[in-house]
Image 1 (tube, rainbow, N blue to C red):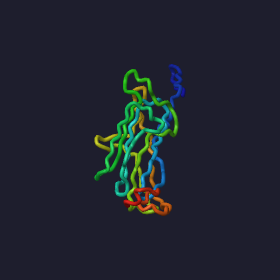
Image 2 (tube, one colour):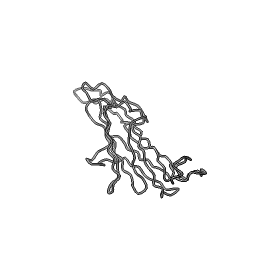
Image 3 (cartoon, one colour):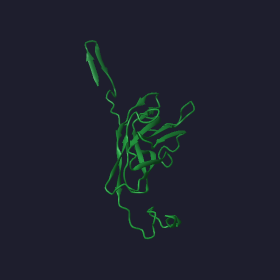
Image 4 (cartoon, rainbow, N blue to C red):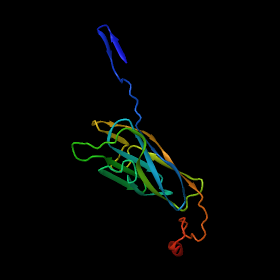
Length: 193
């Protein structure tokens, strides 16, 4: 961009930088009475020193079991702090992640697209019905204390990512002879059921 006035012309390189910072939740399917892992994906256009995530969900048919970064693209983070709430009112989970705790900060997440930032495991209520859609919503101000979806940039500033919701769609389970507890496997637990 060039700016001109009577005293001269100045050029501003990279005057328009469009952010590609985004967080989205996977759309997936699961059977009633089972557990399902749901991935949270992130894209960043600048080096990150950390991030926070906040997700709201309806507890009528979902319980949050765990939130982790194990097995994700950010598994080497030095600080990971999940916070889970399954109790009404307001069912949510939050996650805080820092890549390096000790100055000088040398570990950052370099720019990239559609990387796995978290894995959330949900338990599906056995009474959930086939065809039901259970929304998972990235939402600012969730949790106690309230947490926003924010990227901490390595330059000491923060960036607000665009947020993309996800969902769990309930599907029918395949019939397995002898599977009395409907967990998809035939084992000693079926005798107890």
